[in-house]
Amino acid sequence: MLIKLAFFNLWRNSRRTLLTLSAMVISAAMLILALGIFSGMFADMLASTTEQYHGHIVISKKGYQDKRDLYLHFPVTAEPTQKLMQTLKQQTQVRGISTRLRSFGLLSHGNESRPAELLGVEFAAEADVTTLRHKLIAGHYPDGSRRDEGIIGSTLARRLNIQPGQQLVFVTQAADGSIGNDLLHVSGIFTSGDQLRDGSLVLVDQCWLRELMVLPDVVHEIALRVEQPLLAADLATQLQTRLGPNYEVLDWGKLLPQMQEVIASYDVSRMILVLILYSAAGLGVLNTFYMSVMERSHEFGILLATGMPPAQLRRLVLLESLILGLIATCCALVLGGALTLYMEQVGIDLSDSISAVTYAGGTIAPRLRAVHEWGNYWLPAVCLLAVSLLASYLPARRASKLQPVDVIRGL
Image (tube, rainbow, N blue to C red):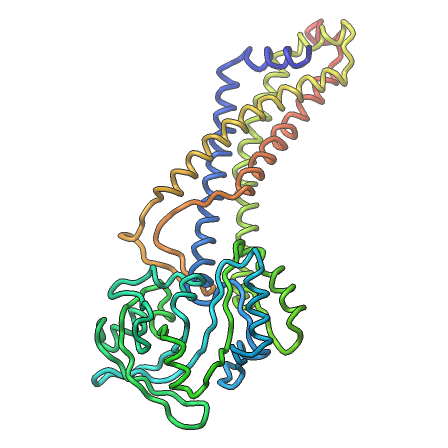
């Protein structure tokens, strides 16, 4: 009975109800879209740092990530390392495993010389961890047909005036104290959007770099790509327990503490946006139901006079608000989901107006795109229902406090 009465009361003044409903739907849908775009920006930043260089989890000898010591390595063919690799392959969360050898030295071409970081990888395995093969702007990704091939960052290539197909001279310190030098054939040029990485990083064949550095069958680190990057810390903790204190297992949050601050600021920004939008929506609901109670004071007085308990009258007004909130929530989820889907598949390209922005170690691409996350839907939905009920509480309380005799008399 109360439900039928609540529906009837809502549509007695359909214009006011529709205006309030429209305000609630638009505010919630825009919030869902805004949160989706924020998630897209965060996903781009996280991908630019983890999926183009670091990986989601990095395993190395303890202290290597801080010191980059040439001699803090471990043998890749030794039994403990082989067992570790088998353990990693059995992890259902792990989607890619790449061993790496790192060297720092000097690259030269013609009369130009620049400092550079050479990352020795197995190109096929590295493609499962990072996405630099998709960032090539010239040349091709090495296929393993020759060992002296590598890909170079676009900024570094421009400074050295190098093109795919040409050769560089690389000079570095070898592990036996000698000076290692060799020719490197440039097969491709990549651009990651990070100026520091594009200006210093070169990916080369791991076997070629081992011979140059006189470090046979060793690696400096193992990089992992996982299914859910936000859960990488849990897997890193499990692996650290298995490996013991001689190894260091760092997830992207520890490798890039600035990104943790980005996550915290994202959560704060999301709550601020919710408060701003729903404050306006709450005032609209409050106005609608307060005016409704004022208009129906005579009706409420008759209901109270005929025996309706004040608590039931209060529930009637709250039920009207709940129904309005449920209708608005369903419409907002459909509209917000459609807008988010459009921004996910199409997006808005802003590259003509702005350039990529580097912040906290990550790069925000000059485009707007959205990402579907459950939190971007349930948070606006729950908050909208809560605002609807809270905003109607005062009108409902006022209705239950009416004195039947005074109302009927028109006092």
